[in-house]
Length: 425
Image 1 (cartoon, rainbow, N blue to C red):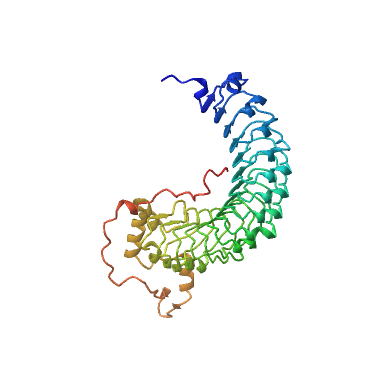
Image 2: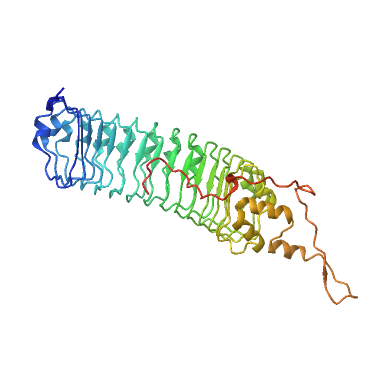
């Protein structure tokens, strides 16, 4: 069966040399519903195109400068004009009353029109990688909005009306100039994922504790010096890499599965971390940490522990023996006991565990100094006799022979914390 132009419902065009959209697209395809034109040199869309009954228009990565006339495409549900050279949106963009997805990322837009608040069916708005310095208060009228992406702009604040986005589940505001969140932010009771990395926050905003559905919080690369108190019962993934933390502080998150504190200024691990009994991954590399508290042995669900590039000298046997621990990372720990380091290089976590079982009293230098205060200096002997306080081992006197390690016990590459899907960095 031969198809006529009138039978075409979907058309895709990719041609780097194309500078003008063929006239036939607007005049001879009356049934066209979805049009995709990408990676071309097209600078403008013909006004007649908007008279078609298009439901989806994808025109990313072209050279489009204007969307004049698009308000007539009233059947549009999806509009993607990302990575063009737009400097503004039409003032009457609100006429696109059926629009559900709007992607204007990667342009040179400095301001969103207030009329955008009339897009009452909009569920996804991506305006990242533009030049926005503020967002209109009418944004709060987007009652169906579930995903808002405003990363890589110049935003110094979010409007208080953002608290009215009752259906918002995913907010990505990375790489801006944010220092605080509006007081209304705690009203976002369905927010599950929040990306705030690369801003100017000096603390974790207190509004977080009111976010009943929040599962992922990423505040990497800010200026957070201390976590005063984070109490978010639903939180599963907390990322505070590349901040100014000198103390972990109090993290009361019963559901937390991943805590990532890479590249801070931590010199110790607080015992409170042992209360995070749901934790699967604890990532602490590139910190000046000097010791590992034995209390971490309470993290019986821990699968991945990263202590690379720290100043630790040993690892408690109870921690190395955690029942679910598959990956223990000790790379570039320059202060690590030399024999322990050799055991790690040979067999990873399994080697560490076996070595500690054979020598359960391996001490850190700090422990040795403390023990040295209990000495017996005998006047009849020219040599000082040192009696080191015997430390208790939580292992039995004659520990069972370690089972032959499986492939799961070998060191694995550190798993990257999963941020929200398609998150721009």
